[in-house]
Image (cartoon, rainbow, N blue to C red):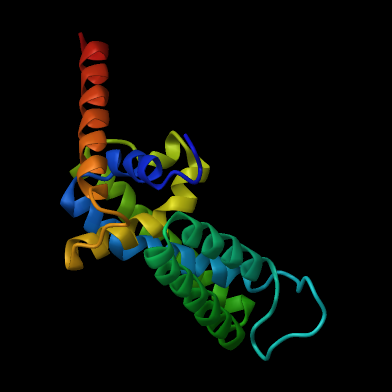
Length: 190
């Protein structure tokens, strides 16, 4: 699967996130996972000397740049919004990390990660009735998750599509993927 093929990436992720309740759970929990991961990365050493107040050019910054560039490369409009949100998360997590200090921040990260991951696993188990995408493609699931939920929110609230017909093409692919998965599941039971 092409890493820069938005339609294929979105369809892969969408096949694991088709239930509206599970999608809503992900919309609320994916970005906090990203934010708190950046909060933990705030305490990594700077990669260059000097800093910009509480902003440190460290591993959290590098991760933010990678995510932002990737999202913009997938779609200029929604990708730019996603890149903006990534840097808001980096700045916010840096400010929070600076204020809390490591001894309290890691506890906030741990509690948030447990809550958010737990919610997502419940969403998959109870509502989606399918294991999360990260079990089949760990890198794609982590990289695509924040962007996927943003596109879902944009599509459902304002009807946004990266290009005309995107949503209908992805929906058809997702339905075919889910049917193939269900057929495979039925064969295993038989």
